[in-house]
Amino acid sequence: MASDYVRNRRKELGLTQQQLAAKADVSVKVVQKFEANRPYDPIHTTFAEFFRALGVDVTYAFLELEWPKRKE
Image 1 (spheres, rainbow, N blue to C red):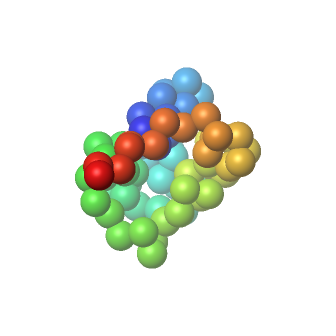
Image 2 (cartoon, rainbow, N blue to C red; image 1 turned 90 degrees about the horizontal axis):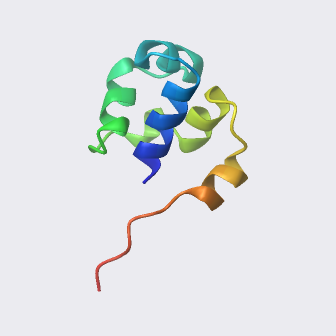
C-alpha cells in the first residue's frame, strides 16, 4: 500500500513525520493520516509531493507499490 511505502521510505531516510511534512509542504496531520491509511483531503497534498520529499521518482514508486485490489 502507498501508506506503507511512504512510512517505510521515511524511516529508511531517518525522517520524522514532522520533517517529512515540512519537506512535502503539508501538515503533520496529513502525514499521520496518510501513513495510517485514513482518509485525508487530497486537495492539500499529492503522492508526488510525498515522493519528491522522499527523493523517489514518482514513476518508479507507482510501479513498485501494491495497490489495494478492487472488490468486485
